[in-house]
Image (cartoon, rainbow, N blue to C red; front, top):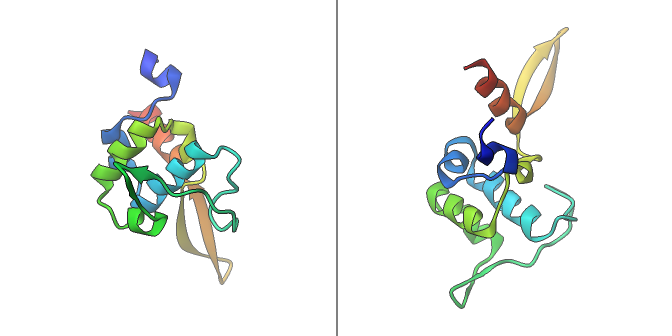
Length: 115
């Protein structure tokens, strides 16, 4: 394991490759307020001000992933800040449809270990 993985830093190209804009915005929220409850918690986090311009979280979700990835990197987002990023898949088991949620972060590290 190299020094970068030990520290848990998340570089912009890694962020943009693996996560959606919503996942990146949620990671920035978690970095700015570690006590934030996560998606759907109803808790608000103060939106960032970038170069004297105040942005809403909704506006940031519409921003291209590459730009958001650089912003996340500037905020010091770490790999662990993506812990609430999940994938949802509709699966049919025993004649029932079930929504299966899996951690994106766990999937990324599992694939990395296999390579």
